[in-house]
Image (cartoon, rainbow, N blue to C red):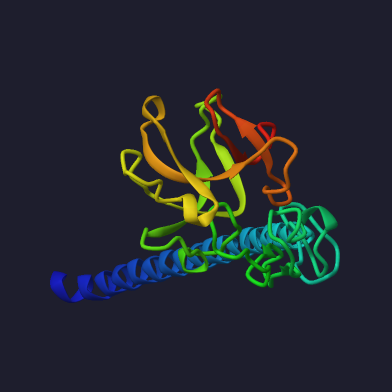
Length: 225
């Protein structure tokens, strides 16, 4: 008797507990949905801000004006743009003639400048432009300075020369307009330099006759170059 009366009461309690669990699940789902919606809204807002910042950065970067080679205006590190300045002509760079050109990178190209006759001290692009007999010709662009060792000569337009033997019975450079010069202090054992006389015309444009204290004078750039 007691068991049969208790069954309806137990069933009612079980139904009540189940209903409570459903309510809890529903509340949790609602909270999770609200939380997810809130997070999604925050993420979208943050992403929009990031995109705005990126766009601003990109726009700021794009407003920077860079040098443009080929627009006819010499800008920043460009040496030329279209035409070559008169101060950078072939003659100003120590060549006897020719026309320097402005390259596609806005630097001056001297490849079309003419060279000398190949003798000692004449202008050159490479050693093949020089002819100094049986000696191994070289096209120098720099030479040690006997007067100011810390400031070597910059040989504009190249300088045809060759290593020589100062102790040779006959000067190996003489037949090519030069003399074998040596300077133990500078470590120069022997090199052909162009001979000249004061007031003479042996030196090409951009070079002058200089004496280092010996009995000979040589064609070299002025000391202030």
